[in-house]
Amino acid sequence: MTVPLLRLPVLRPVPALTPYALVTIVHLSAIAAGADGLVAATKPLLMPTLLAGLVLALPVRRSPLLLWGGLALVFSLLGDVLLQNPGDVGFLLGMAAFGLAHVAYIALYLGPLRTQRLPRWGLALGILLGVSWWGSMVAALALWLGSLLVPVALYGLVLGAAAVCALTTRPLVAVGAVVFLLSDTLLAFDRFLPGFSVLDADLAIMLTYCLGQGLIIAGVIAAARAPRPTPAII
Image (cartoon, rainbow, N blue to C red; front, side):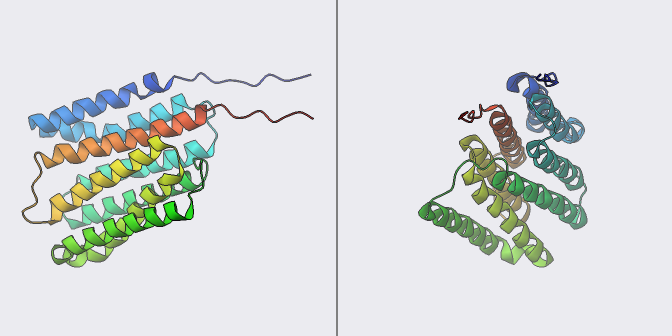
């Protein structure tokens, strides 16, 4: 006799991520309008709504996808909150939290999300691009970082490694990881490089951050819902 499995209620990806999309729109609109109070109020809501969407959309709640994806979002929330504190201490603590988020993402990319083995040339190209990005960023900011040079350089290594590792996953996740890298690159240049100017840098940073995180989690949900091949019965 076969015992039926208990199936939990699951939302489809779009409805599950709708609250995150709405909070993102409100947050970005507040940045564009210069409504600092609304910006501060909505930023801590971004990752919780994305985490809730992940939980509700996954067909299986007890899984490595939720473990590592959930940890990445929790550390990202911690980073969001800490970075709202002015000064170097808040920045260092926030950067450390995001470093842990990327470590969790690396575990996700190389574990349950890994879908392909890169050829040697692809791996070499990815590493070359990652090292080139890291070296260029550190070289451009080195004169202005002061005592923050070592922690920023270490964080850059973790961030670059996460983007390279994401190349072994689904395209949606890989694109999200690269967009996340772009967001942190804009943040570093806007904070430390004198004369760096991007039209509404805060908006560009948060737009790429929210988009990158959303694409990664959407890719996690897609991977969890992908049909698995049925083993042949001999």
